Image (cartoon, rainbow, N blue to C red; front, side, top):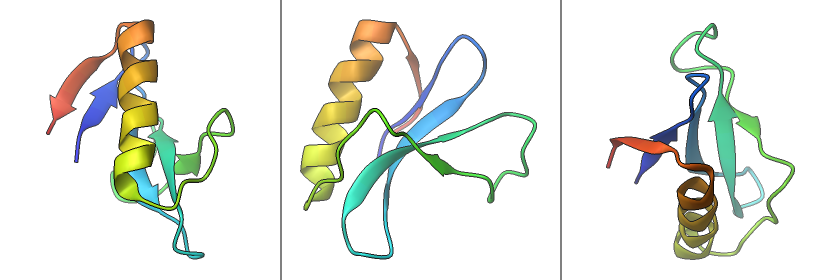
Length: 70
């Protein structure tokens, strides 16, 4: 799983929803490390992690984000 970081320090990664679908989520640096992940409304919920990862990878590349974990 790849985690991206933007210039503000916000982190983005794909997480599974309670419904079983996958969606990229963001986390602000002032939040506690394991809580506070919010769903990115700009993305559709996907049936597989691979589809959601592909969406996030392309978006992060266009926005010039850096990989912080893989």
